[in-house]
Length: 170
Image 1 (tube, rainbow, N blue to C red):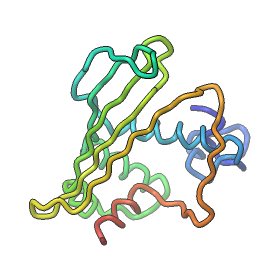
Image 2: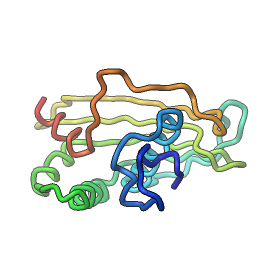
Image 3: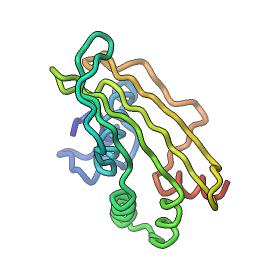
């Protein structure tokens, strides 16, 4: 991990279980949040195909098809819930997960091994009818500096289970 991903007010010495206890220090937050995003994705996704090497922004990159593994996602959410002492309705969460598919691509710089791009195509279906679709592409650059990004003033913190629950309610 990186110190930038830990909350602004974390007891020293840092402990891994403190990683999710708050928002990172503001000047490091974009980088820290990106690191957290990559950490979670690495724990719940699987590589489904090696597409070889392609070019992105003039650089060679390994390109992989990826997908969220439902069993890994369920295990991650269970562990996250249990680590916070929160109740976990495995049957309900499993049913929610079964309605989703999430596939994408991961582009990794062939020289530095920095992530250059992640794309996601997320879909939710109810009884064979697509009820939600979200496509996202995140391009990473300037790996040695944090961009000036701030969350919207009205942004609210939520966990993965809250996200899935909110989509199920809609």
